[in-house]
Length: 335
Ligand code: NAD
Ligand code: TDX
Image (tube, rainbow, N blue to C red):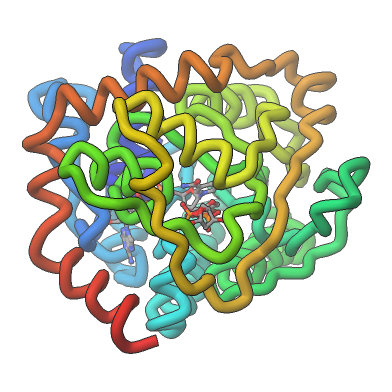
């Protein structure tokens, strides 16, 4: 299996899931090690003979064709993933998410139509109004991306489908909701808020704090991708989510209280431009067809996640420095 972006948050959790469940599988992890990639995430697999890391860019077609020669499947996680960064620097998102996906599709086609699974997001479907609680995203929802990030993911999804339709490439796509769990880079909402509080800093809640996200533990997302790559129908899309909608304020309060603070630690800050109001995912197809169901309830998952950040201060202190601080400064001072 060739996994791209396996040194990031979800990719590393997925590799750990696969090599634990199927110890005879062999994985090549191709990752550029951007600010978000971290080899420490898979340190325990460093010497596993069935795991190989290759540092490289998915836009390097020669390298991709070389390492994909003998694999049975490409599972494509690599991407620029932070919506706020896509506001500051849209081109890097077009480059990696659109052009990079294209390079991988071409390689898969040239190498005799390799099986290809593309990891996408529910954000390609756009934004739902808060009050229309009966509406959720599903496989037939029209695409309506709103941010440079979600537009670049949508463009990639269309290319993946076009390669199936035009060249018969055996593809599947998953559109998953917001993930949380261990090894998530602390620029994202949940780990940013946990680590800020561990540093006794306030947490920056955007706008009115009422935006809603549909949360899933990363272990459940990994299990969903596992089901799709093994038994998913070729050419099909599966939306993935855990039926767990929460407002940002609700989650903020939970984290703040869990860490022994009160609401005085919440700082309402200027909203993200174009901030999507609500995401909601209806994962009926993957549940009915593949028998997948989320296992982790949010209360347990968030407590375990908070504990993971408490137990791993070296990990997050190292990544929450250098480049990250420059980015944070740009985000708050130059937008
Ligand atoms: P992440 O930012 O933690 O990791 C991305 C990884 O991709 C990093 O290891 C980085 O080094 C690597 N990478 C980036 N550009 C690369 C390039 N040009 N060549 C090779 N490697 C490159 O991201 P994540 O949160 O783990 O997301 C993984 C995938 O899941 C993405 O495709 C994302 O769109 C999708 N997704 C994420 C979420 C979420 O909530 N985090 C939800 C749904 C879908
Ligand atoms: O400082 C913050 N304050 C705040 O209020 C940050 C970083 C976020 N937020 C809000 C914005 C969102 O409503 O929290 C919510 C979650 O924000 P992010 O963690 O940035 O996630 P989101 O924008 O929803 O996108 C995520 O989910 C889908 C991932 O980053 C994407 O890669 C994935 O596709």
